[in-house]
Length: 336
Length: 278
Image 1 (cartoon, chains in turn green, blue):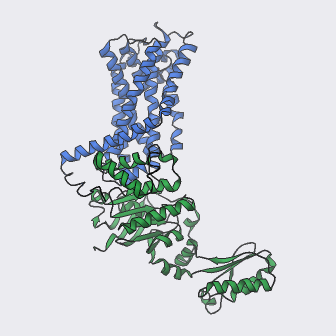
Image 2 (cartoon, chains in turn green, yellow; image 1 turned 30 degrees about the vertical axis):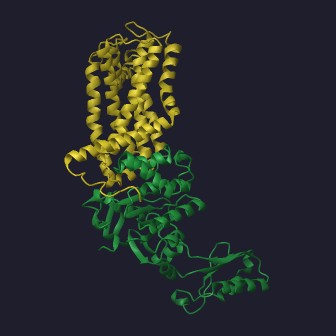
Image 3 (cartoon, one colour; image 1 turned 135 degrees about the horizontal axis):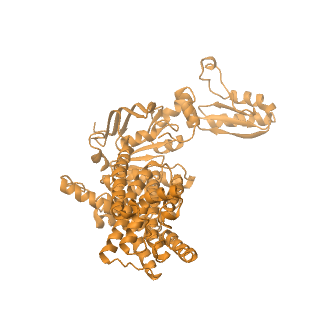
């Protein structure tokens, strides 16, 4: 079992009478890797993290974190993990340094070691300059970095990041990603939950997709994308009357469809209600395909609003993996 | 890594060491709370501003027209009431800080750490009691400057302050319980709608005997009234008692009420905290 930082078997967690947040969830996270937990709101990501970090008691199944049984030795688990939740749970009223020293003392480092460790982490997370400013004055990215630093005080074996970049601007997200990469380079195992496929793609070497409380896929990011069908070309025409021409142009470079009735013919699909958008899966030389479509449209004098290569979105991953759009996907807000 | 993190938790087993670390954790949570106050002094000013302004308004604007039944100066009657009101409004602070910590992930972070879980709640309570002591000190100093005197002797005055802190103590558990029950800090602000009438329908501002009979009875049996009447008695200030049983036994009831509230709400708060892992 030594190769895994997190091992979970058939986890069950029920809220109240009929909400099954986890329903036979399995997970295996290799040591020293970033493992992404991907799923729509309400899929059970946060519940999984809360169970593995001892915040919630299990109703069934078995989980080991850093080789320690979560149900039997929660306190020992707590001394070996770090948790950065959906909120940057740092104290906005305290300075960055005061925050880290306080958490250091609460981790039982004692005053002197807590001060030294705080200084070390401030430097490591590039916060030394802002160390004595109130955390309330920090940018979103800085606050998340401080939050990460607080999670890293005891150099935990496993770090849990629950949607660490939700609500951050692109710059803040980049800062957090860099910090996470640095941690993994230092040997920490990271379990990352996210709603963003690109985030999991950039950070994780393996991704588990959750839906309705169970793992419905466990693969590398590339493997996952292959299942979804890779990149697609998308064209938006200015006038609905030009749509047939656009569909024809796109179909010439498109892959075969995935539904049985279209499996042998290249397939382009129109999507929006104004009848201006067409997209199709493409593989192979995608740039050549895009150029080809652009040239055809230009020759036929079709006015184009937008044209480009699109990566599969999380929605598409789910459409493909679950075969249906779940009701919960539509609703905002994670059921806790 | 220059700081040696090995063996930090070695030797923490055994009841003695556990109790030591539970206390140390509690103290560190208290330190956090006190640092909050030190880093935003304006908060304390606002906090104390309300009772001080109330004293000035009621004392000087209405004070001339109001005479407590049984004689004495209205301001001397009012000031112990203000002490009680400040303690009662402390409930809001406990609830709002608790709900803020719970909803912003601070409580979760604490619970995911190898610290004593009890420290999260006990630290909140200890912190609020220390703040209450500071509030009473500042209020008493203001009152003395306004000419208020405690004529009942030093021991009785100490007893009065002890009763005030006892009231605050029982309200800590109400606040922690509500703080863990209420979903958001915004919703907790709605507690004012309950706490404000609760302090008004009491003997804090006027004697219950001056109210309509039914309201007077509610006010007289309001636990806050018992503490107000008891502290007036102990400070040697005008009591304005109507001779009813509840007012004649104010000191006893100023112990019984908070004890009863604590007996109900402390287990509720602890249970609610433990249910966070459900």
